[in-house]
Image (cartoon, rainbow, N blue to C red; front, side):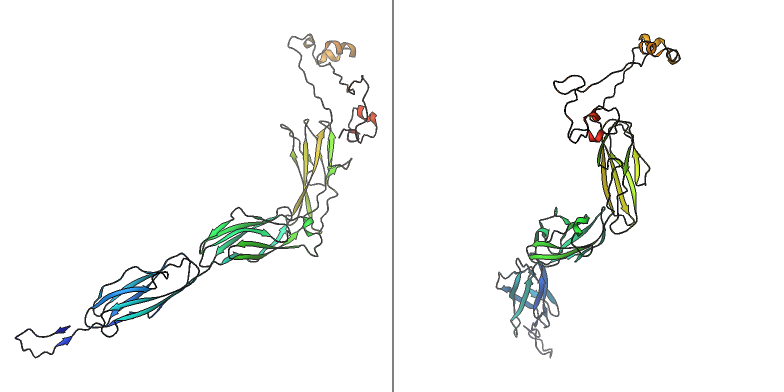
Length: 412
């Protein structure tokens, strides 16, 4: 462009040419490693260092299908100004992406500027936190759980299809959150639980459990070491004191003595006894007498099933439990009746009945009735008790009124 004086004017000023001068920056664009499927935008500036306006003839990307696209293209850049060309990268797959941004202007010296474009679509990377998974000391009884975070620290989606333990040392994993698909920076959690027992330590030189948590991920199998040191609980042993059995049959109102004196602590720690009635008939108020002692008493107050539970706990909180089941006698009958309001026996109070002879009292006073129940063998007669039940020592025991031999004379 030439700028001079108007025709007929001799101003003495020289003619000046207004020339554009393109300046493109940066000279290249490198996105580095990017998340797959997540668009990312970078900018190229077209500057004009000249004295005349710079016309932008064309802006293209070669090749057009390389994963880059133009979001906007300026048409003119004024002198000493700059315009922005936003370039969007979308990497649909892991791998390298390469292209060239071609800028064509009316710059007389450099009509075409080529800007290399480069990016790498990254891959997913599974990160486990914490790693390794160290439970520290875990007490038998209460056990312990640890929350494990699975996070995608990479640049592409990954999936975790499942998780399992390699050695079966006793750790348990809750896989309710799997399978999981994780995008970049996304995470999910697993819960690992250990409820240790003495059997888990059989054959080990020290009370240390180790295992390997194997994650089945789309990026490949990934192993995480897991370990825990176990504090064993006292070995609870509870029996009925006299029979030394864990199941006993007694009549309602008969005291039962429960003995836990054979309990021992394998590691020598101090421990305490705690007894409870874990199961009882509806309406029963039976409890233990002698709480905290190795031997306690429980008296069934209703006919039904009772379970007395012993929990032995060491000084660190590790515990085990043992149960004794108290059952009713094989035949237990409770009879109750109330004389009618106009019954003749109501004419005599307690003092009057006490003054009578036994025979007269049995005939005239209330509450003197009796009911005899006799068990006979099928097809037998009164007094025929049939064959002795399994484990019975003496058939005569079956006819006893008391409970002294009830456990040696019951049918299995």
